[in-house]
Image (cartoon, rainbow, N blue to C red):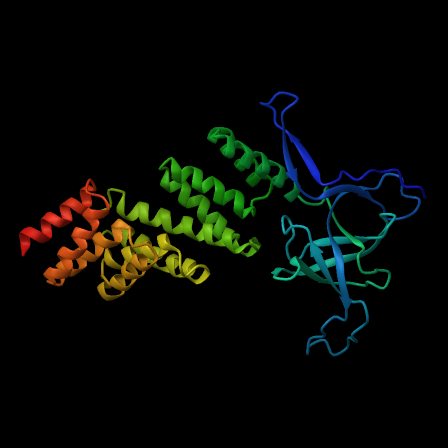
Length: 352
């Protein structure tokens, strides 16, 4: 069979309706091609080249699989160009130099390697497979590809400042793939910026539910941070009174998600502050731990004014006049116009 097809090399061009014909969104991404099952197959299937075979080996036999014998070339490792749209349980196709399908891969794991970047492993019969064969993902079999297109458009509109169109595209991306965690996250931040906190909370929660499908630690961190930001806003920037059951719930959740975020990035200034504030301003305050967190924030950024203010109020609460005044004065030196710093300074000065 003579295969007549062209690789779309390196970039996929996405047209946006509102732009003129000459204006395009450009995104470096998978190559697009056709794959074939037999030499006589004239139609083929549209597919993306998502990676190359890195290595072949023997499948690990579980103790429960007593009747199975480990065979050569039954386990495969694939070096992926990106983790977009690739998840455990999915079927990928190994193709030879003529784009003929020589094997199927049942994806077992997807992970990021320091040496090789994104990798996936899977099982199958790979006797006809050689290292460096291409691995493809059918366009027709997954919605992720369409979701990716919409998300790329949404990212473009967000960068250009068109938040309305950006939100529309993120919603379309989610409609195509409800498990697109990054689209939920980006939409959540757009709602958060508009102070529509309940909508933002919903999107971050949906992103969090699909955290299993996120392989980049920064994306994981940003999703969990969204969970923290919405809890902080709903607990402290709403009309919920202290002692309200819903407010207590938000604070407790804020503590939990702060701990998860710090496990990913222990030196995040913002998250250390939010964690400390949840501990400080809660139904059952944890003053000692809150103090530790605020001192950690100042260690990371000595000009983080809110940490100085909270420390001043903590020391005031525990009748340590010198420290209360010291941190209140520090806050005013950082920003003399800060109303919370002014109020704190007056409070500690008058009271002692």
